[in-house]
Amino acid sequence: MSADPARRIATELGRRGLAAPARLLLDAHRPLAPLVVDAGAALDPFLRMIGGRATEDMRHLLGDTAELDRLIAELAAAEERHAEPG
Image 1 (cartoon, rainbow, N blue to C red):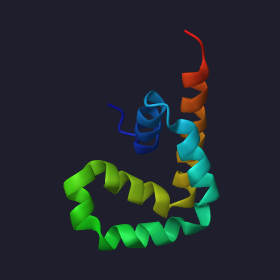
Image 2 (tube, rainbow, N blue to C red):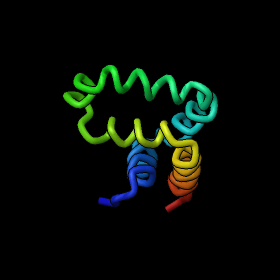
Image 3 (cartoon, helix red, strand yellow):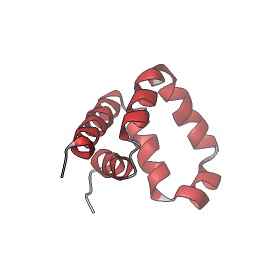
Image 4 (tube, rainbow, N blue to C red):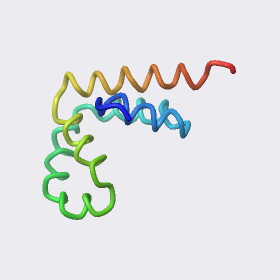
């Protein structure tokens, strides 16, 4: 598995056919990302029980604008890979 959280999350969402909806949600809710990170910090103990490392990766990606842009780009690439025939 890749050490790059943006690529790992985008690949998994693309595999499930959720890359396009995830990209749209991230684009639409970009201004709320810092609030989501703050809420995630408050709910961290509960989120770790459910999602483990994935929640930590998402908090990191949402907390950094450049990383959020990378995640959106990776989701677009995963969407394109999923749409390719074959």
